[in-house]
Amino acid sequence: MITYTLCLHLISDTTFGRGDGIAGSLDREVEHDKHGLPYLRGRTLKGLLAEEVDNTVFSLYQISQNSKQQFDYSAVRAARHALFGRPGSGLTNSGALHISNAQLPENIRSVVAQSNLNREQVLRSLTRVRRQTAIDRSGIANSGSLRSMRVINRETPMEATVSIPTELSDWQFALLAAGVLALRRGGTGRNRGRGKLRADLLDTNGKSVIATGYARLGKLVEEQS
Image (cartoon, rainbow, N blue to C red; front, side):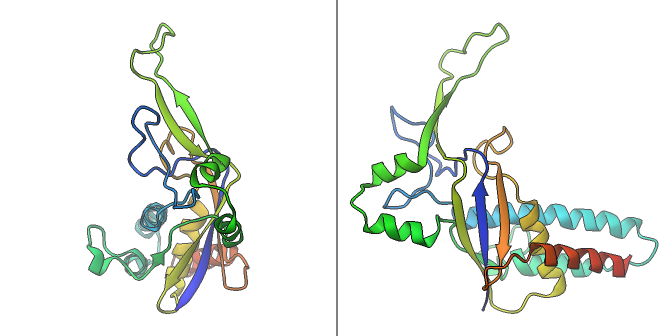
């Protein structure tokens, strides 16, 4: 089993929502565990990463169409499917890549688990509630448009374990690194200024492999163009 650590650092306030709120109090709550620690579901994180990899794959497809020499785009597509499965596939064909929930670092979770703080105290220390309303053209708030959303405070670090049963091929490693490098937003409102983040991929020695993977991507493209 090959493992990496996917590190997320929240640059702006972020809502990793769980799809519901608290009646009469909050329209959108964040995912959090029994101790009140916020997290991002691994399945959601894998989807965000797959989206960025797909953008890279599409760019490589365009290169393959414009290349003066034959470009083996089929190898790119095969590497993508090996990692994430084919689009529309079920759980039995979801790709070899497994990503755990992204949580606060283990040392922080350990301290919180052993503390006397209750769930609400922990949640309030790491998050806050933001309220917003829609404004019409005259500058007046639309009636009934006030919404409240809990956000995870900026500068919060999170980590997820990325595992795959076999050694990554050159294309798989290059695509994974490119996807992590391109991962810049996540959560509710990520297209409206929220959820800005920075991601990195570390090996078992805690060393970033992003630069190595991206350089390998460039070399592979150069060799086949």
